[in-house]
Length: 112
Length: 191
Image (cartoon, rainbow over all chains, first blue to last red; front, side):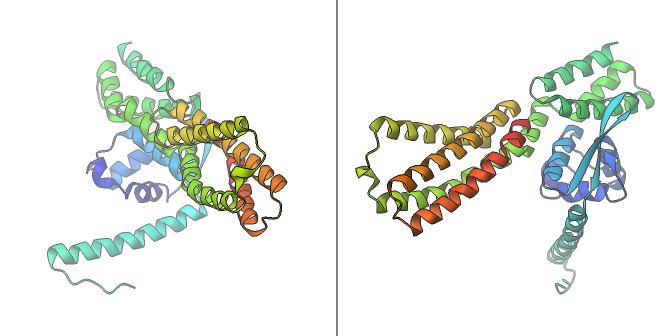
């Protein structure tokens, strides 16, 4: 899946990648690769500005540590970020159900 | 070693546009990527080429950081608030027949020039592609906005204090905007 197809969904993917605990940028990208079976085709460098945007929005919190003499920035979900992830999951389920109904003729469940 | 030299050149290109703390973070991720390719059996030069290719073009990364910066967000918010505050002050000035006020022409021209400069700085911060220029433009625009708001409020209150309700609305809006602008000078400057 290419970057332009991910527009609007990248924030949810990044928040989900941080759900299990703090990660640095590279580990976030690795988690996304594993969770998508390697089908995510996104320049790794663009993950970092997206993380900064989420931090500015208060959805994740960053902190510095030193690993093997290198400065490393770790990110973790804030309470607001965990809430936003729940909301994005629910919105995605509704969207996916609607698209499946429209494209594959499946019955569309009533909105909760 | 040619591999790390390629990575160093890549980071140098990013350093020309981005602050050190961001480059440090990218360097850590790039090094991890480089080591992963080495573990997969690539020689150092091929591993460095693959790591740099995976990270993406520096101009794309710089543009993404610029878009995600607090400087850009602050500039866009100030631009969005501009028309509302401007209309309120226009109502005040027209109601008070401000063109009859004893204000020297030089002062009027200077205020107009400052207003145009601040709008230009905000536009540059909202649309610019160079991280550091966007940060500087946004910080300067924050200071300029606070000065313009304060100047306007003080002038109107000194010359036409009888204009109670329209001036009160405009002063409250300007005070709120000035406070927002001043709180965001340092965040905008650092991105």
